[in-house]
Image 1: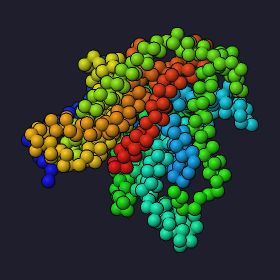
Image 2: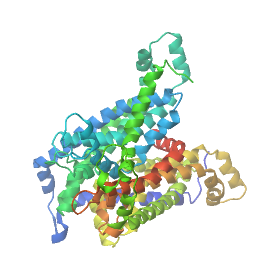
Image 3: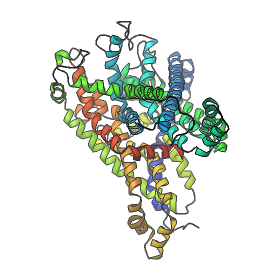
Length: 287
Length: 274
């Protein structure tokens, strides 16, 4: 039996207050703003009902930003999972150099995203960058060419985030009992069979958590793209967060900017709810 | 311990080398760029002579020393406040019987999923109203809030691992719940506090979106904002950017390497138990 002291709630009150006033209230305030025409510099502030949302549904730039965000999320997440799993297996099985490798993958994790963005921008610079000069094709402006730019942003995200995926999956691998592998070896199972019959299914819960964390992170991507391309060229790398930011801070339109931000929030909530209801639950049962 | 059947030793070595090159190579290239002279910054080979010119230049054109100080201040204060707020709550969540516990943990989880952009406009207007825009405190408040979920999850895990008997013994010996927390539980949770402190500090040091929107004057910027806006009059000062990036990053990389076991444990616990 745990104790229920009279003033126990005082312990949690500061945390609850912070979460309530600085996270939950602002979300409600953002919804309220999204129902207004609110342009800061002109002191223009009026209730407009759902007008902003009606505009949103006809806003081609919003759907383009949504498409870019989804593309960025799906492609980077898929590559990060495969690469992260390979690295986790390598770290799990390496007998020598394990510490060195783990230290190496922590380097991108610790580097601020903005710094990694500028680092890759330098390496991808069409005139002096390391990568265009090492490649057989010269003078490719990766960050200035539609089609290439989004993939450059994905590359930076892979560099920055795969370590996190690898570390989470490594923790999952460590939780798989050795007996299962020994039994598989005794039964003469091939490495491929062992991987698909033991490693992958037992890694299910870790994979489920990793996918959720990374997907939510990728859906709100801002830093790397802001620094690499600012959303260009021709808005081909503009994500929801970038579009909302520009509408609010560059155009000064807090009303429609908030509408975009609330839409982003709603998409994140929708994705996580659907995900937790389906994959999350079945993975939770497996645990 | 050998698990499953190993791919050949050379394949493993090759994989390891690829991992090292991909993850460390870009940072190494950045360090190399920062050590070249302005005239040789675009060369590909190893430099004949190393130069610290770029490091000197990084501090000359802009208030970079001030920017480093701002970031250190904001990150340190955020870390202290977050630890103070989160440790009491985590203790109560782990050791006391309170109704609504799961509500707080779910709220924390939900907040950790918020896209920061969704709170930018309301927080901007609120900070403007109370005249905290463009001040360190204007960053500490949102940083504390959005570092709190991770801190709560990691610390609650650490407090759970401390045996209940120790808390009960302290109560039997006449401690109030708060004294039992301060004198018995908190010292035992030191490793957890250290892990959380490292994670929160790194989060605050690296945060960009709020820092970009809530600060306007060059002397109030934090490191990520300054580096994102670093530009020269004519061409991009690649050497200076590289030098500034190395200065801003090297301390974090060293901390990450020194405390790597702790960080990995904290990160995976925060995620896996979530």
